[in-house]
Structure formats: structure tokens, C-alpha cells
Length: 159
Image 1 (cartoon, rainbow, N blue to C red):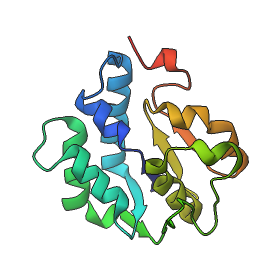
Image 2 (image 1 turned 60 degrees about the vertical axis):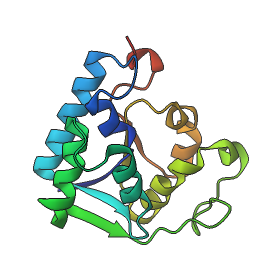
Image 3 (image 1 turned 135 degrees about the vertical axis):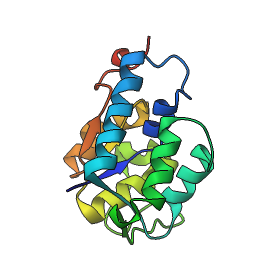
Image 4 (image 1 turned 120 degrees about the horizontal axis):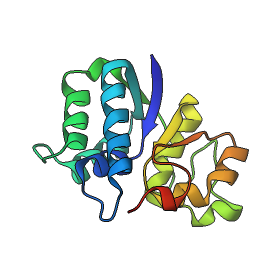
């Protein structure tokens, strides 16, 4: 079973919560999440920052495919949630990964996903967060693997 990291924007897009996203992109996120639920594992931080973001943005009982995905993973498929220690310090750095140079501008709220990727080697899946796209080359040079569910151009994401 493949272990992956899922940025919160993926289930949000699946929910239909993101304005202007194309139907093709939304369907791609739904297909991805359904496939993952049947035969995959997700990696999150032991410190709880990713799970907290999922719960805050997707909420228990919120409508939508993405919210149901998260609820099912943490209840029915809890044995397929891989938790690793990936603490971020007060400056937004992980002990094995510094957000310096061009990555100084990288969104602090996404740094927890990078920390988990450093610890697991898992790929990070994104739907429509342009910060990943903007920093893709530098992250890749530093060993972080990204997958763009809706394509790696903004033009592919929106109607």
C-alpha cells in the first residue's frame, strides 16, 4: 500500500468548497480520494497539526466527499493512518529541513506537510494550492516529491 500526504486543499476541492475550480479538477480529487480510501495510507504528524487542520477546515459532519474521506480515514481506516514525529520549531523549520533561500516565502501552514514528507519520503498530493506550484522546483531539488492531481498549471485548475 502506498503512503501519501494529502494537503487539505484536496478534500476541500472534492467538497466543492473552492470557487472557480473546474469540474474536471473536482472529479480528479474525488477519484483520487476514493482510490486512496480503498487502497492507500496517509501520513500525518504525530504532533497533530495536520489532523487539527483537517478537522478545523473540513469539520466533523460537514457535507462533501472530502469531509467524508477524512472522517472515514480517522474512524474506519484508522489503521492506515501513519503517524510520524515531525515537529516544526518556532521559526517554521523542521530539524532536517530549513525553509531558507527562496523557500523563506513558503506558506508556514504547509510546512508541516513538508516535515512529514522529510520523515517518510512520501509524496505530497496537491489540488489547487499555488504555493506548491511556485516552490515545486526548489522543493524537488531538496528531495520533496509533489503530485498535482489537477495538473501542474493553474490553467488546468480553474474554469
